[in-house]
Image (cartoon, rainbow, N blue to C red; front, side, top):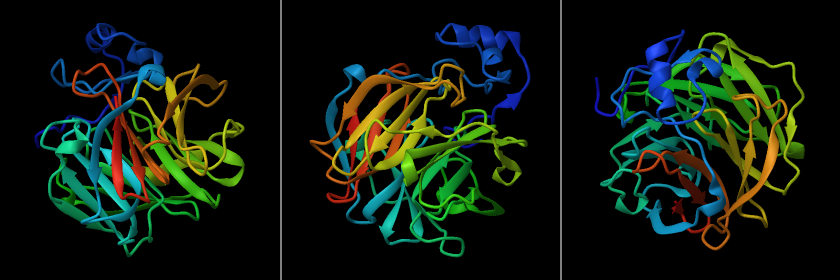
Amino acid sequence: MAEGAFNRPVLGNAVGDNAFRQTLGGPMYSDIGGVTPPSIPAGTEQIYTVDMSSMDYANKSASTALHQLTPKALAVGADGDFYLISGTSPNNLVHEIPLGTNWDMSTFQAVSGTLNYSSQLTSAQGMDLSKDNTVLWLLKASGEIYQYSGDAGDLDSFSYDSKTYDTELINGRGIAVSYDGTKWWYARSTNGEIHQFTMSTPFDISTSSKDAIDPFLFTTSTGLADINVTTDGTKFCVLAASTTDKVFQHTMNTPNSLVGMTYDTVILDSSNEAVSPDGLAMGNGASGTALTVYVTDGTTDKVFQYD
């Protein structure tokens, strides 16, 4: 198994794994759809929640100017040892960028791999990466989601799975997939709508169906740009662009469900760094408990880090 990889979550109920999960705090996996966590060593489990109220700019950033102008879509590897980025120039590539120090965007290195997606779409508006680093989803502005897979941490090995799903909802801006690969969310700029979907086969976008619930309407600000969800399925974050340039934190009162989701009145202000924010990614940071947030900026061609 490649370094940084771990077994994909499967449905089930393992008392021992749940007990280990409880030692880190938060709900047991049986409370989140009966999901059993991956069998990986303690200290490397990528389960995290978030409270952005005490977060600030870490004075760390990565320049994308040598490989990606006007960056948009962003994802970070589960161990924080690399990030993936795509944008409008070029408009057909995902780049893999290793980090010399995990979770530290200022230690970015040269491009180590690329994925050419020109046969499926141009200018991916959003992306998400499974927490075992083996499945990648790209969002087309017209509402289609395309799925790719390969070896963990080796983007050159990724290829199109010939699996897609059409939301039939235009103006797509962001996608987020649950830790267990059963739920995913689609954000569109139209009315700030966020829609919820279920994959009947986990991690297979082609088995998706739209949940019979009303969309969540993000009305706190304007210019919805991207979304992300914590791996424990309790916090949902929305990046707003336009004149706002902030990340807004929400609570999923039922884990991994938009039903009853509420705004926490908690904001991460990225406006001093990001002039035109477009992409949002999150991870559990170097300590394993403190969240790290990353925001792309299409004007300065940078990724900014917040701790």
